[in-house]
Amino acid sequence: EYKLSQRVNAIQPSPTLAVSQKSAELKAEGHNVIGLGVGEPDFPTPKFICEAAKVAIDQGHTRYTAVDGIPELKQAVINKFKRDNQLDYGMDQILVSAGGKHSIFNLLSAWINDGDEVIIPAPFWVSYPDMTILLGGVPVIVEAGIEQAYKITPEQLAAAITPKTRMLFLNSPSNPTGMAYTAEELRGLAEVLRQHPQVLVATDDMYEHVLWSDESFHNIAMVAPDLMDRIVVLSGVSKAYAMTGWRIGYAAGPAPIIAAMKKIQSQSTSNPCSIAQHAALAALEGDQSFIGEMVTEFKARHERLVEGLNAIEGIKAIPADGTFYSFPNIEGLMAAKGVSTDVELCELLLQEQKVALVPGTAFGAPGHFRLSFAAAQEVLDDAVRRIAAFAAK
Ligand code: PLP
Image 1 (cartoon, rainbow, N blue to C red):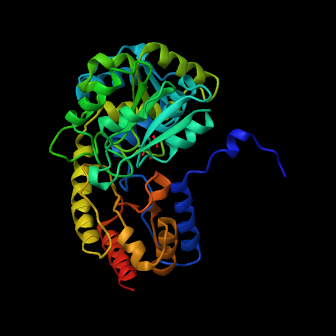
Image 2: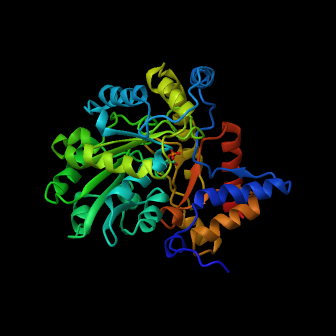
């Protein structure tokens, strides 16, 4: 028996990774498993990006870089914010890290003290609460159900804020729901935040480009420029450029906060991979047409999937604005199957029909499951057939 830290004992391993592992085990046993648990595009990284990495190796970019990233990449991030979001940042306001997850970890490390409250709207991305706990904070979950398109209201935000609140997470488009806040909705949240100057907003824009709603992308910084001194934008190249394995994310925000995050990074991981940084530079500065092609494909799969799911008794999916996830309500299906939790339902589905999904409980939203449609159309059609067969039995 090893006596591990209280810190690590307070958290769970990432549940989405756990599902991938379980379905991999069943596959290894020879079962025909459809795994729709993963959170990464099923496209290869565009060739020109891979080529840039090869060139970087050949040119000897294989050493330590500046902790916060090579200046060319930081400049490309600045250009990206100007181009896509009309936001102006200086070089001391950008930190490049080893993936979006790392950026979030650095931010919480730099900002949260023991007992500080962090408001996390649910459904949430699985890592926000556990990272908060790991760093001594207290997650305050604000629930938003299907009837409000899984988005919190200004009234809910106002009610959740206490004198101990130090931070709010926003994630739009959202993993797991695919819903995006409109500019109008963000303005409503900003109005509440104006009355609480102690609250920092972390806007996780990881799925910014994976969006097909009528309204173009907005984050809270774009609609409330007066709050810029307490907004940190978190993003990265993982989802937009199918670069999950390269591990490059970035943060933009007030210089003192970014400097603090950089200090933590300097004492933990140092710079992100030098070669991956050159690849990310090519991604941000190169031809952006890959994104449009990928999003067109995701949108088509999404429409067909939502239609297929809604045709199944007990499942209710509302159309998403973006991402590559569908997050239907399955309470009817649970009742029909005689199970009381979504976790049991997902286990049964895996057992009976060999379809691996992530239960909504992992995202703070019981009564749902998350399907990733980052899979070929035939696979998705097969999955819907199997879920229908499961529901019919
Ligand atoms: N934020 C959200 C909402 C995500 O879904 C993910 C990845 O699943 C991340 C951040 C982290 O991305 P990365 O793979 O760059 O660490």
